[in-house]
Image (cartoon, rainbow, N blue to C red; front, side):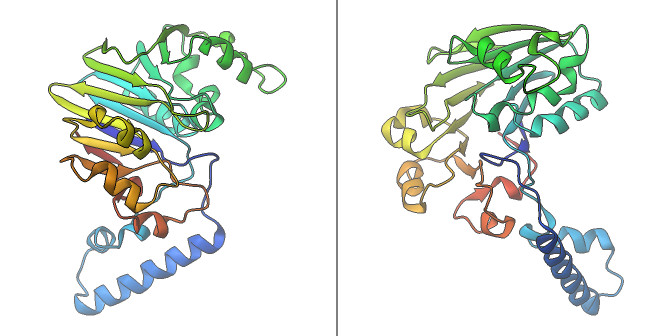
Length: 274
């Protein structure tokens, strides 16, 4: 399985300010200056590759959207504003036909990219939208009421069907998927996704501590807490061999602050293999 991070902000999109951008450029220039003093022939690409993580990579301003692939099989998790770029990229790759989308919540940061997701507007494309709630269709239609958006949910020419996910493992293409309901209204559902013996877990530290069995055998854990303390994360994951990655960065968190978290931050990578 490969995981591509298209959006890792929580709550609302947040772009770099002018001051943050200028500070980043200044740090990059100073870093390059020192590197070229040591080796004037160092290619620019090598200088860029050696920059500190918080300078060369962005958390970006997009809210949650993940793409999980295994060969030609694909699951999209949430359609925050990161879905806009994902849609363009899928078009460039020539991907069309059947799409499977899991929504772990219907809060805005999980669904606000759907109206701007280009594949939805392509005739012949079909979408199965999975979630733990039985009224997902009504929720999506409400988001695109004409009072808020000029194109209704059902007016886009792709076909859409809905399915409910539970803790009982079910197949989505070649993936096995389990869904664990959120602990409270402010949290997101958690997912355990397995393919070819490898397991990815998207969950909160609170749920892992309450139900440690859901993390057993996981190769990669994506922690969707934004306010979790290092102690809570350590207690939830210290017995696990899995790699732990933070996602859902708070809007006010700078790239530098995110990169200094005690575990790997999704700001440090674009794509990784499970």
